[in-house]
Image (tube, rainbow, N blue to C red; front, top):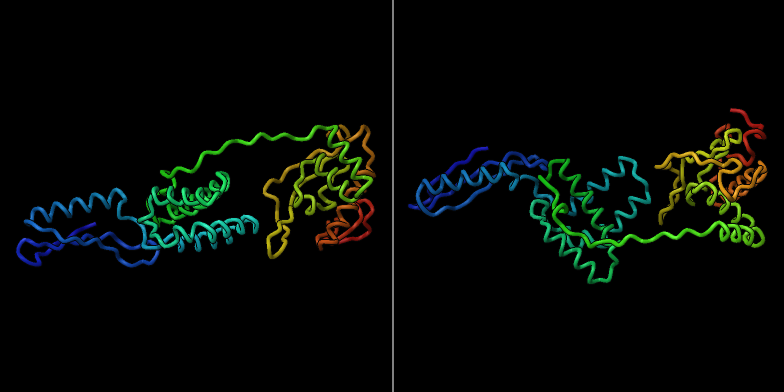
Length: 303
């Protein structure tokens, strides 16, 4: 990093300091100043700018927040992030971040700009939990800009998001769940099967629809969650589950599973889930790797 100076007129000096290439555009960056006084004062100003640049004041790029969010979303898509996650980020960026901060250059974005943005969201009546979603999205994008070398540090570190009050989770009692299951068996047997598997294994709705016969181990009494259905506004997609876990399904694994647990109960639930998946064009797969409505032991297909 070097600087130069020239006297434009008596007592008026023009100084320039080269900062290297812009990490985004590849063009050379310089800082220029006009100094009134003697040559010594101009040299001192060069030294001050060089010192400030070494501390990160002039690092980064001329790209703005909108440019960053566009490239950050493309980066997440290449990494294989869930379509549901990407849809949520796009909504936060479109409805809040871009309109308020999109035109600000990354190098000029400050913690006070971000705090004003949070205050604007509060004035609109958004809950603190929702504002934290904006904070998490913006923070992730800016930290990626740091990793790319576009900026030296993320201003969200110094920003202050609204405080959150942890919500108390009150799960239903076992008696309540039993009553719900008994009532559902009478009203909607298919829904009762889904609720039974969900309550005994902890599967989410998307994980229930992503189950395959090969995920169920009758001998070991376990159910492996490998994939899930992700729904967005435009489409549904089968993806690998981010939490690949095994849930016990054997007798005594849950107070809701009687001792001994008849295998026909789980087989019946799986057959019901299969019918529901077919209705939505998502079908559990047989051991052959093709859609199948029969458990592995009864599947007559071969690879």
